[in-house]
Length: 416
Image (cartoon, rainbow, N blue to C red; front, top):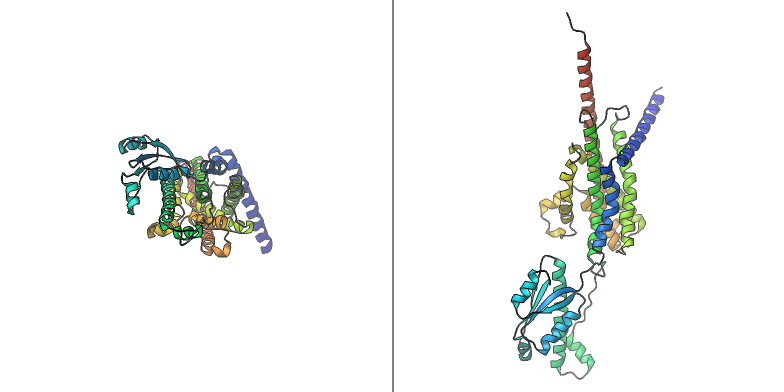
């Protein structure tokens, strides 16, 4: 008899779980706001971000020149700078005031100033200098200016060394110009591209943020449509904590399993980004990340009482989370307090682990800290989700019982 009751309880729980799962899927499809965050944003945002940075690097940055030397050496230097792919000289100015005007108007992003004594100092064997003025509104402009001028100065240095060496053979010229031969190799990002560096982190962050927004919006809708402003509806299918948590999370997981495959596999392939991850490693790593994000979003949804609240609470966190993850800003330079704050969010470990797996070919043994941290977050946030949903079930029952008592008290006959 007890075995039969136990089996009936299990069967009832499974039926309720799939009922809640189906109701949550229907709610996602019917709610335009949730549908946007769960489907349209994951489909569109990766394409938008990747398309913006698809050129990878900034080329032919317009620059102005103030050449007060006007010698063959200064012209040779400017020719080397202009021949570089990073920079394009668009104007030769008479003085710095004219160059500043072009910089202020946005017609150029940097100024190359060659002093009057440029060639004279070189002829005397005195170290000379070239001054650069850069528009720091974009770091890539500064990088292009510095790279082009550094390469030009190194090339001229070699030529000057060879001319003054008095060598008789090409081999002697080569040794005197570069006693130590070096080779510059960009590991894991051969084109030094901005998209290959930033887009993988953005894709991981989109998964977490859209889940926070979508689940929060769904929670706000549930409260607004409930007469008691409760998160859990009073229904015979919604009286078990595990069946509610597992039913809802299963619906979210099914959606984001497809969205994650699209964002992390198809989008990089469409734009020819670096993608050297092993399929099995990537799958094993993304599984706890999606689960941690789902349970984290469900835990946070307890604070959402109106549909609009999640937009105000979560949207502004995207940029700070990208910075404190240690990708766009060096992790070693992040203050200890903010580093501790970053451990709350699955995106911190997800971004660092995914970049190493996808861009560097790491395996799970190479990212043990991130992988284990995501599983720990999954377990912790699953427990917190169960706790907050259990609390909501209790509140929902309490409000219904209070309402029933009020109705009964009204129906009692009054004593004459």
